[in-house]
Each structure stands twice: as structure tokens, then as C-alpha cells.
Length: 265
Image (tube, rainbow, N blue to C red; front, side, top):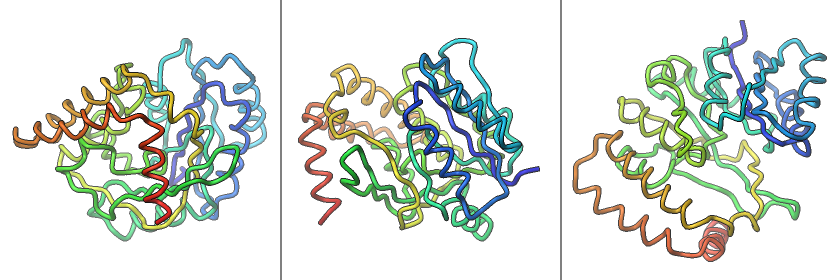
């Protein structure tokens, strides 16, 4: 039985999924299974994943009957997972070779933590342009302001996921489903940690950053309100939503420039 189950939802990732799978095959930690679920891709994603599943016994391939969204797709992977630890992985990202080894070691040595993330370098076709950094020990009172983790870099204890009920399958959380889950995890009394080094490469097109719609921003505010309830925070924390509302009206390109400048300072 594998110690780690890496779960990879996939949708129209034919240009990137091979590199993502290869990054798991290249891990220094070898006691893993990779569970890929194709969410009804319309390109060649499933065929590429099928070739790997046929070649490697520890790669399992699933397929949704209909396009179901990120939460439902991850949940299907988790239900098939045999590992003590669940490692998140997106089909367009790259795990650096020592990622799983470092994160599993941390959870083994620090049993008080339920999940562990890391820093991540953001990259696109033009290369790496910033590093995402989060505090070592994210505080419960701040979880509604943002996920406080590079979401796809996280490894969680499977028992904790079972305890809080896995991902929400509400399509409103297709963007931000991780933040909603982490709020439930913290609301249940668990805590997480961020390893203060880059173990993950997160593919995010700088142009795409500027395409957030006003509706996306409203969903972000609504999700944050829900997270306050899940985190069981005092009512005065609703006043802190003002910061999120103001941020929702700042053009994404400007916010990106600020984040890049801070990241490189």
C-alpha cells in the first residue's frame, strides 16, 4: 500500500500534463501512487494519461461521466486513494524532485500539524516571474482573507480530509475550493505549516491574471464570508471583509505588479 496518494484533476491539459506526470515520476520519494481523473477533457489529455497508466502500475486513471468541476474531481481521486497522505497536484504544474520527501518527513516528525505546504515559483511561457510566500504557521483568524497556502503544493493527512468531509462540490467554489476546504480544516481545530522553501512550480499566465471578471470577484467576497462562519470567528471579523471588497475593485494587473515587486524585494 503506498504511503502517499498524489491526486491530479485534469481538464484540457494535453500541453502540460506530461511534464506534470514526469515531475512525480522524478520524485526522490518513491512510495507513492498517482491518481489522475480526467474531467471530460475535449482534447488529448485522457489519451496521454492513459499511456502513462498503462506503463506504470502506480498510476491510476479515472474519468468523469460529465464535466463535474474541481471539487468533485478531486473527491473522486481521494475516494480511490490508499495513502496515509494526500498530495495535491495540478495537471499544468511541476513538483520539484524533493517535494514529497520533504513534506512527508515534516508530517512524520511534526504530528501536531495536519497539512503542509511550501513556497512556489509562478511561471509562464516567459519563465519564472515571482515567488509565492506564506507564513510558516498560518493563523486561523486570517484564513478567510485567502488560502494562506499555495494550494496545489499542500500535502494533507487522509484522516483529516475524511474528518471534514473532503472538498465542497458546489460549483461556486470551482475557483477557490481549496480556501473553503482549509477553512473547514482550521474550523475543526487543525493547523497547517508552510515549509519556507520552493518545492513547487505553479504555472500561471501573467495575461490570465488580468482576466478576472467582476463576478469572479463577487464570488471571492462571498467565499470569504462563508469562511468566517466555517472558522467560527467573532462577528467583528466581518468588518475585515472591507479589505477584500476594496481589493476586488483593484485591477488584477495592478495587483500583480505589486505582488511581483514585493516578491522580488
